[in-house]
Structures are given as structure tokens and as C-alpha cells.
Image 1 (tube, rainbow, N blue to C red):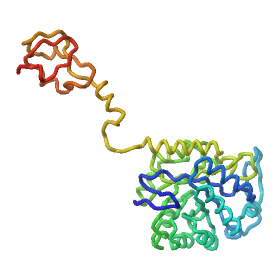
Image 2 (tube, helix red, strand yellow; image 1 turned 180 degrees about the horizontal axis):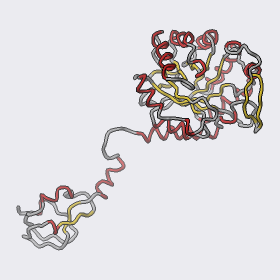
Image 3 (cartoon, rainbow, N blue to C red; image 1 turned 30 degrees about the vertical axis):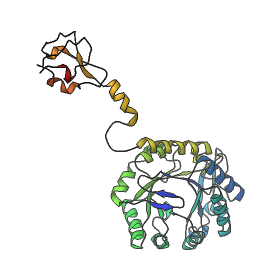
Image 4 (tube, one colour; image 1 turned 120 degrees about the vertical axis):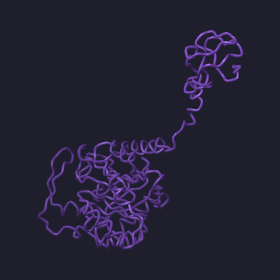
Length: 350
């Protein structure tokens, strides 16, 4: 799998994990709040922010459908149509938010829910697209994303293996090349027992493509674990205040938590290092100081023929290694060797 370019970043093997602050609809329809969230995400070190550019009518026609969520410690039940409608972003607003995001040296992208929304993103020149878990079965939109030539993320929440196969096949058959499958559990927040991070390696093996993680858990541990399992893309819901009204703030990460996650993932990238087996540079001196060598177990006279009882194993590791002790046994000392001194080859007559 080859890496690919997303704005000023690269996604793929050996590259730093691409960290996304998922603002989604947490802006509550307020451009001021959206801008403050973008600024906070940039300050925390996110590589990108993601929004949702949809038209409510694209996916909702029954105005009686309700949604129940916890906001500010209280259970709220409201019509889905009303909830989504107040958070819609127009094409003009989307362009304004993109301009502000880029001024913070952060990438901007979004999740469309129709080819009209996709066209808005193509016009803006976004560096990557996101197809939400609820739209994994919308193969016409996935094909349109592929034909755009823009790298695409397919989220797999709620999906069966067949669902994912259909989405990946549609994307590839339509000419799409740069693809990230996003392991996701569409439960908010996700219980630990349902995170199933091992699906990351399963998806990579099954589809031969880059795999990331959309994190809906409390805290940052799951996202860190995902990176250790090879996730090259991590998305975390983001808010500036968990007490803000709305369905997603409660389980979103705060600026402090996002900064913690960014720091942890960057450190883990360094810690993973290389696969080659051998001492690290910082171990080289310790290898000599702390490994063992063959030394005289007692004071030994010149001419003495060594037996195994004459040899002890002590620091430093600059002499004959313990694994080579048999080559010393039966040899005659050329000179006297005091107790504890290294037994080297040059000290023998034969």
C-alpha cells in the first residue's frame, strides 16, 4: 500500500498518524462557535477538522422521527428534522470555514450526503472526502466520490463484511485509488467491550487498504491503541465545552484531551521505531558495561590449566563471552591472573 497526499500531509505506512478533530454538528449552527472550535483544534495540534455538509431533506422526510440524547445532564427528545436543520451549513458558510481553517495551517474536509454536497466540496478543492457509516450503503455516492479523484474515507460503523465489500468494490470499480477504511462502532459513547480494535488488522488484511479509527469512546486510550495496531488515520469528536447543547458534546474530546491525544500519538510513532532486531544506540554502552565476561574465579598461577571451576561470569562484557567458556577450558595460562580479572585469549600458552 502506497501513501498518498492530503494537503500538506501524507497518509500511509511509515507516515505520522493523521489526526482529525470531528466537529461535525457540534457548532450548533453558529459560525462563531465553529470558528472557535477550529482555532481550539488547531491549537491542540490536530492535522484536520471535519464538518458535515448536508441537506436534511437528503436523508430525512418523516418529520415525526425523533432522537433521544443526553445534553447538559438532561435527556432530550426532539424531532430529528429540527435537530439537523438548525445545524445545516450552506455552501457559502462551508467556504468561509475552510478559509478560516486553512489560515490556521490545518486541513479542512467534510461529509456530504448527496452528489450536490459532494460537488460543493470538489469546488472547494478539499484534500480528502468522508463517507459516513450511515451512507456506506449509498453506492452511487461512493462511486461519485471515487470519480472525483479525491482520496476518500469510508466509515464502517454498523456494517457487515458484505456491506464493506460492496462499498470498497463500488469505490474501486469506479476508479477510486486512495482509500481509507475507518473502523467505527456507531454507539455514543462506545462501551469498552464493543470497541473491537482488532478489527483494524482484520480490515487491513481483508481489503489491502489503509485503515483508520473513528473513536466514540470516553478518553484517548482507544485511539492510542488503534495507532499501535496500525491505524494511519484517527478521528475524534471534538468540542470546546461538553455542557453545550446538542447530541454529541457529551462524549466529545475537549481541547485538553485532544492535545493529550496528539502528544501521545506522536510519541507512540517514535516509540514504534524499527522492526530490525539489535541494540538501540543508547544500549551500545550498556552492552559493554552490563553484559558478562569470563573472569578468574580465584587467583590463578602462571602455567595453570583452566577448568570450568576456574571461571566466573562478571561484568563488564568486554571480554570472552560466557557462551564461549568452553574454548577456555583446558588451556594453560601464560601468566598469573588475579581473581576477578578478565580471561582473554592472549593470556594463554596454548
